[in-house]
Length: 136
Length: 106
Image (tube, rainbow over all chains, first blue to last red; front, top):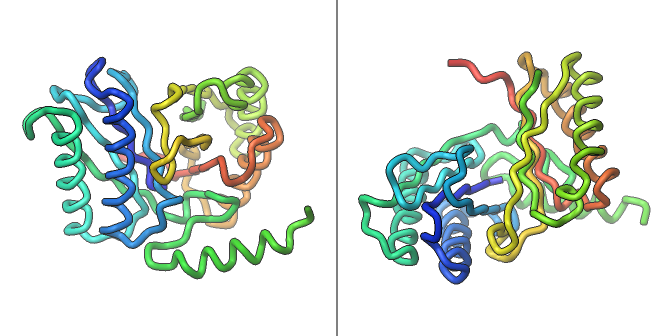
């Protein structure tokens, strides 16, 4: 977590564009929130009925840990739209990004309950300690 | 019946073992919550899934409990869910993101 789902029109993004957008999403999320890159997952689909697309060519729905400010969420969404337009070759009206939140305590990743925003360093220390104590 | 989203990398262990996983997930839900579970498989095509900007081997398994949970109960359910997933697929705990949410209210 976070998980960013990018739903697109068929053929809207080639492999290079998907990789570039995934890297941008990772960089944007980490830049805005300070979260480590290893937490950032992105998946792309073409006209999946299970995810929003609305009337857009490219639509990203991000689910992030609860606790970020409205300004942070807005900045993430705006910068993702910029990445979509840059790499997808569409204008602003054809791309959208939406950010949703879920409590960190509802998520288990890397074998541990996710840390609250800002508590990642302590989480990684505990994670490393647990691994070193685990039987090999 | 609990709806369970299973986002899996196409062609990898979790995707190839859907039948066994679906049965294990249903048994998990009956034990934890007393109701059955329907897995909704969403395969991510090769070249379409990324973690930290690189090709991903991670799965995401997400469900909402039928009632609000205490954190102790939620964590027990999350750990049981990850244990069954790693046992059936052979993936590591670093390759599974599990979510047990409270019920959706509108």
